[in-house]
Amino acid sequence: MVKAKTWILKKHFEGFPKESNFELREEVLPELQDEDVLVEAIYLSVDPYMRFLSKMWQKEGDVQFGTQLAKVLKSKDPAFPEGCYVVADCGWRTHTVTKANGPAGPILTRMVSEWPSDIPMSLALGSLGMPGLTALYGLEEVCKIQPGETVVVSAAAGAVGAMVGQICKIKGCKVVGSAGGDDKVAYLKELGFDQAFNYKTVSSLEEALKKASPEGYDCYFENVGGPFFTAALKNMKPGGRIAVCGAISTYNDTEPQMCPYPHHEIITRQLKIEGFMVRSWRHKDEESVKRMLKWKKEGKLKTKEVVTVGFENMPTAFIKMLKGDGLGKAIVKV
Image (spheres, rainbow, N blue to C red):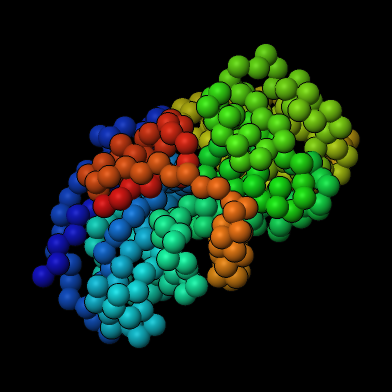
């Protein structure tokens, strides 16, 4: 008999999430049936999309959705032998009995066999996992960046933004980043950003963007929404491309933000704007992770993690992440 601890979404978020939105429970797991796998969480990820998609993806009383790095303890699926490691979309659970695939697609994904022993496996939830892949696909598949172009990224010190900047430099681009703190700006410069500024202290976002790149921007990797989006539009080059990944400045609003209508800039600058989700290129994930592993081994990628210890601290880690506390990818070590 295996018991699992789970975090339930007790009450949908209204405004900024609180620990009282969640409830810790315990359940007894069923015996394995044909093709079932029992996994044990080692690391769990907390990400902004959990706030953004909450009401779309879950009901009150559901286990909080999310991704974890887990070890297979028992298996009746030969593709997932006991002892192997997987990235699992099992939610906030310590243990799970599941099949490898569900109605919406894969639940379990084997870690790439070439994963080096000297690179932490936890990075499979961060810079070498979903956030890193989001950065890669947003740049390559949506923006289609070319050497010599200039890219601006908002929330640049976040898990996705930091990877955006570093991949831009690998591909021969100039990159400008915005972040919410002087320590974060210093981190961006450490990562190799050509220019970086603290959006909380500049007198004008539009002028800060213009100063960082007077010639304008070929691409904008959008993570925040709100006034920054409007300011970025006014600094785009004609024919510029914008990859819309997130809008974290709006996730906790109880009333919609009002901003100037941007249609004039979009039309006269002939901008291309595309929203995207990382799973659209899931078929490329294994090859893409191998590329990023190679960059990491070559010293071209730097990574930071904010590690919270203890499954009981999942809500705390989630809330800290949304507040922007710490530098690096937020994860929980069970």
